Amino acid sequence: MMPGAVVLGGDYQGLGIARSLGRRGVRTLVVDDERSIARASRWTAASLRVPSLRTDDDVLDALSLARARRGDLTGWVVFPTRDEQVAALSRHRSLLTRTWRIPTPGWDCVRVAWDKRETYRMAQKLGVPAPRTSSEPDFTAPVLVKPAIKEHFFYATGAKAWRADSPAELRERFAAAAAIVPEDEIMVQEMIPGDDQFSYCAFVKDGSAVASMTVRRARQHPSDFGRASTFVRSVPVPALAERSLCFLREIGYYGLVEMEYKLDPRDGEFKLLDVNARTWGYHTLGAAAGIDFPYLLFRDQIGQPLPAPGPARAGVSWIRLATDLPNFLVDLRAGRVRAGDYLRTLRGIDTEAVFSWRDPLPGLYEVALLPYLAVKRGL
Image 1 (cartoon, rainbow, N blue to C red):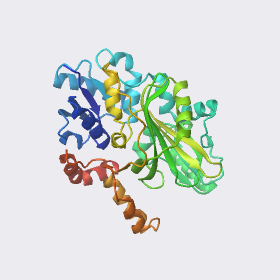
Image 2: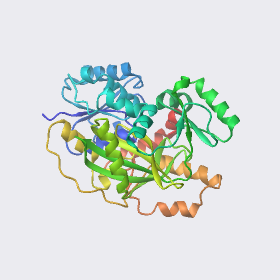
Image 3: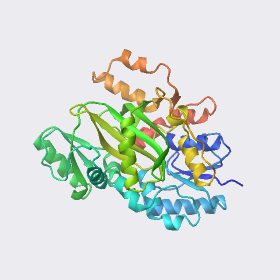
Image 4: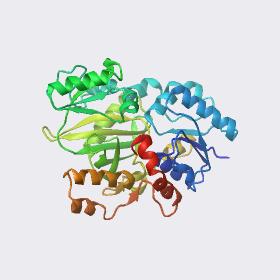
């Protein structure tokens, strides 16, 4: 019998993986530490609630519990959906691969994405443009105060970064961050003006992209320093492929990856912001554009030949209304957007993060869970 897949995390990202595999007959087990929507999908074969998935021990215990509860899962492919899960699978890869198929590279590779200090050192070494970054609060404001390791900061603050608009505010923000995480994990980074954010998304193997697409992040939640995309459209940006693959070849990367950039209007350069060594929130845009990323990775993991997908279609749009609409209302009240401009972007949306006529229950579950999700993690 063909092996199945364990999806760690059952929000809209995990739901997209379960749908991708389940509709092709792959059994999927969704493991989550929250009330989640993926377990309601017709394509999810089973689900398992665990106390936590935040630490290495949590992830290892969850996989052990999955085997104890669901029987022999030897050879099943494990899909992480959060960075801390990626780190856990990577650090314990040699142990886990005795039982599971782990499509996450080893720690020497993953730590370059996990620790943003390593990310920017590698970018500098390779000549990949990135924002100016320092470990000292000595930049000319406005700047960002952000963590080198996102999870150490995010779960304490709910924020991806803090803005500082004056030297005094920078010192205050830096001190506040140092009370949460070690001081050597705090980065001060120049603010790149404008809103032009792009990403290179790919399945990378042997130094080449098996499949890839580039997108523009038109809106995010929150609007200033977004934790997640809310409205994205595929666009052709050939310049991102060359520099992204240069970076990924250097670290010996394998698997699904999203590399985030911001276009700097001051010099016309795309500046590298983040490297996400996993599926990304809007990965279902890929299927709508002609590239089903989770299924490609699954086929490769179980040794099946890979189809040769064509280039991702440009102009395909993705939205997550559960966060995009509330964010719009906040921006509307603040005078940052006009209602007519926003409504025009909703015409002809190609795919929604959760709602599907073929699989409607997760959408209904999400509506019911919105108060819980807002309190638990700000959606």
